[in-house]
Amino acid sequence: MNCLHGKPAVYSTTSNGTFWFCGQNSSCNFICAENECYMFEKAIMAWRCTEQPHPRCREHNKLAKMCVVKDLMKESYGRPFFVCGEKGKKCSFWMWGDVYPIAKPECHHGLPCVIRKVKKEGLNKDRVFFCCPNDKECTCRFFEWAPDEQVGFFQTVNFSEEPLENKEKNNYLATEFINSLANELKL
Picture 1 (cartoon, rainbow, N blue to C red):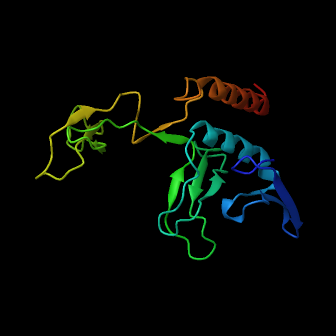
Picture 2 (cartoon, rainbow, N blue to C red):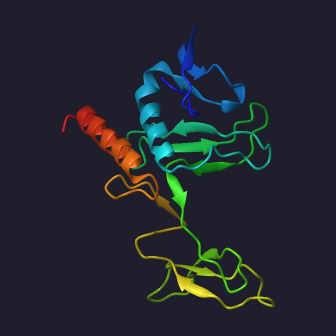
């Protein structure tokens, strides 16, 4: 078992069971119960496919803790997510671990656009678009629809399509993920 940073994890047995954790960097915030190793290995693989850095909570500026949706009845079963890694008073930081941001165009000011959703009732309701990040007084009126295949504010790792970068490596990881999932489900 490896931690989030690819370093060999160490384990410790307590009265509550056996747990794996990062033995090299306590700020890594990786901890996994022995009976959840398989789920965490798959979740870590999905997160690595996004090629996103380890997130930090904004309030404490600490590395976030990775968790996995464990409820079999949920559609998101097995998906990785990150929460505040603070051991004391946790903040509200939360984000999916298997998504990567949509590439944003620049407005006419040369600034990265913001992403908005159409709120008005009609044909385009809930459709996502890019616009100038400045307020109404300073806007350059830049507008562009987000690609239709990118639903919502983020695009989830899709193992059936080519990932963004390092396609060969990611295709290998994706194929490995799909094959092991199929074996687990005995397909």
